[in-house]
Length: 402
Figure 1: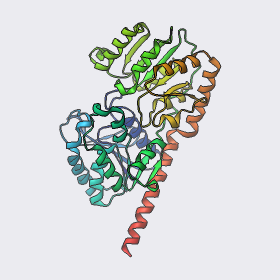
Figure 2 (figure 1 turned 180 degrees about the vertical axis):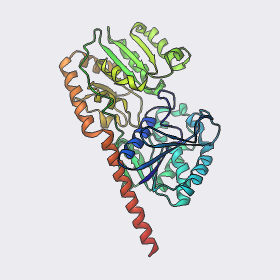
Figure 3 (figure 1 turned 45 degrees about the vertical axis):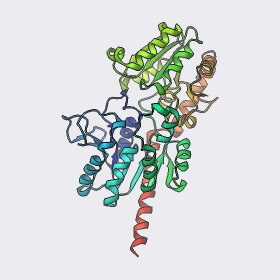
Figure 4 (figure 1 turned 30 degrees about the vertical axis):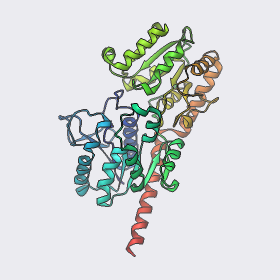
């Protein structure tokens, strides 16, 4: 198949750790590479955010990144991109008029709006993955939600025009069906993890014990709750990987807020903000700690628990979104309610006190990742959805022509 992935703000070539660069970038890059390995021709269409980047870049993994000029060729926060969606749609239409894919797969709601406009005019089948939903963001962030005001309405409309939706977890399916999407038009295919890159090493047995948080420095990731939990965990260290480079942390507002919180709680000497960490170094960092903690207030899926499990480390996560699918309490980790530092401290304390349970959780997590979340499996399941959509669209076209 000739497949075009549309990812308007999440360029697979982008450096991870920025405010708008995270799990979706990893997902799109890994999916594109995996589909190439399965024999498909893949192009990722993304918005140009650098005036000097080539129109098309051939990635070593075999797929092409096509940069579409829409709006200024600079970084634009994703919540400010909606005015440029019509121009993205125009660029897709121009491209697909002469180079039509067999199927397009859009990622994130604004990509879906642009792709559906172009694909609808050209009769190109369209699969969509939301990655995050406005209903969930509005519920948890309320007045602090910076999304365009009509996001939820537009996402609901999008559900009615795409050929199929791929959700990443069961919680998302429930949200989508509440928005009116027919259960017959949605499939669950989780995100994956690179098990060749993330591999286990022996348990370190740190003294003092060490926790790790990996993620963007935004408030909803719940890092402040981990800092607060540290006050009830004497002699436990916390490493935080993410955000700008270590030299730029002092200018980052969330980094400053976390450090001020740590000072107020008297735990500043046990909190280390590492800044951005190169992707190649993340497995070694995970392997150097006793427990990986990821307690966002909400999370559409969450790749960090999979990376920790692939490295054989136990996870304490919040019981939200896709984390409820990936982390099995009492088996490979523990789930706690979000925004509850007291319960988080209890869960971490219990794990740190039991070497045998940590080792057992690490082994169970490793087995779970290899059984359900390897990228080759995720890509195969995605390919099956594509094939099903193409069969249905072809059958529908044949029926209409009779």
